[in-house]
Image (cartoon, rainbow, N blue to C red; front, side):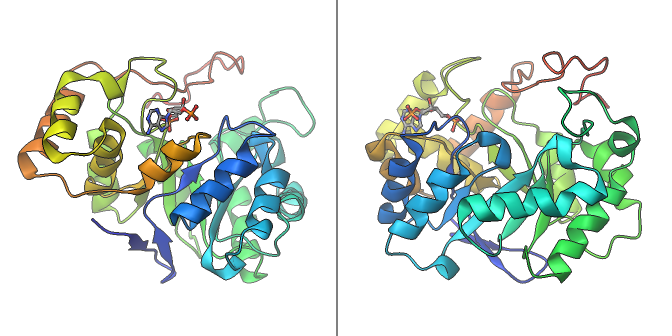
Length: 298
Ligand code: A2P
């Protein structure tokens, strides 16, 4: 299985990252250190995870040079106004203690008014191009190496890329897991040369079902002499996506880094079972943000 993918910029992005969403202060630093010690060279963070300072400190305290680590962060919804993008990025850079990011994503295709409590900014939500142009400028300034999107469905991607972009989105980070495998989005993204990053790859905290106790997954793990988590994480990379498993447990962090090519029949079994039930999304803040539409509706 690939250890890296090549982005349109030519940069090589590691296929397995430590995800640090819901990794709280006081535990995330140790998880990052365990990850770097295990061989990870990719940390997926965001301003909204409120842990960038501890993540940055752990990176600096590790013996691994900055230029060998891929760091991703994300622009929060309240900073989509073009005049707010650079200061939001600077805040992430300061907190992470670095002068550039490898990848910066628009966290959601939803803009809120600055300093508001989830008050929708309709214009920048329906047209994210002004926000994107500012991200392009951040690449030109050298503050970020690659830019991308997150939680965009196909119509929203097309809405953005219909503009005369100087830089195409390098990745789209979306929920992908056994419960919500999104085969159509995966196929479309491959056809359109847009790499997907799988968040909540294990199904996140068993909210919709416990991926790791699915009998077929356990059987495959047993046959291959690996763990159920390794089967699922490998499946994601074998599908052609970047995978971002989250753990704050050092032994699991280490376990999750080791991926194995699955025999075709095992891969097909997981793919078939994952598509055999109605998709259930683990993450959808539409209601909690008080939106009168569903973010993921076409
Ligand atoms: P913890 O962080 O306490 O170790 P996802 O990546 O889909 O969001 O899933 C994250 C959840 O899965 C967390 O609750 C994490 O627990 C748990 N988890 C991560 N890796 C493993 C593993 N190898 N085995 C079992 N549970 C895991």
